[in-house]
Length: 330
Image 1 (cartoon, rainbow, N blue to C red):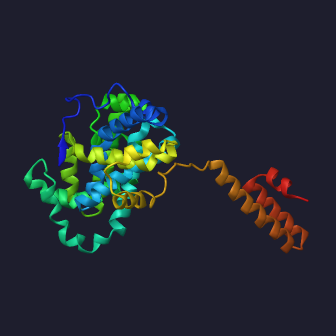
Image 2: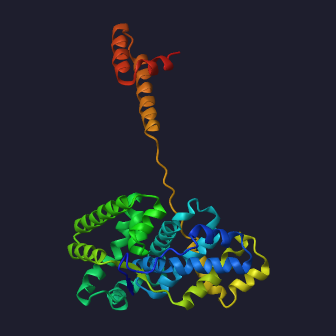
């Protein structure tokens, strides 16, 4: 179900041990300490991950597979995470990509449309009159959230999917609290306008109302699923961590090979989370200048009349600068 929490009036989400320390303990600790650290990470971020998986998928079994595949990926790729403070955002993107892949490639997709309408009854909403709005919003919420610029997406994930307070978000992102509030407000406006453009007016109104009331879009994760996830993920990541065969067997005890294989295939079906690469404006400017220079050289060969060539070179100089022309002369 959707977890309701009045942000700012609940126990702090961020415990004394941060994600960086837990990841360090997981990667470098002894098997028992490593398992304890990993279990803490699953328990801490599990509700957010399960929320993404259930919102994107219609079937509980599919959502649980995607949930386990997300933490399987964490167990194998934890060492490659660059900014460990932002583990929430990393897990969100992994969960979203895995859930999208599961939705598009699963063998049970043929009858998903028929049973999709029943999902609203499986997900208890804050108010029954909003069930229609939630059923409409659920399939597209994360599509639109995933399209937001990072500066708006990050605070939304931390605030409305993990339930952190504005002060906690500000501390984690190293932003002023006023910046967090401003970007959350802007992100809500962007989500609302994009939903309206899709024709989902009811969903847009429901989302704004829910966020203003402090609703956290996360899902309850049973302890039994946490334990299964820890065992399966650690078994999958044991070789990557260089764990002994005994530790690998201990971590994987109780899991069937078929279940493990299915989760592994799902985890391996997606790429790494995106790494934002901003191409500098100078690179673009240099590319345009190179094109103009090539056109100029070609024109010099075409024009045989010295006066025409002189006029062409003069015009080219005004566009790209005399230094570019001189550089290209023989």
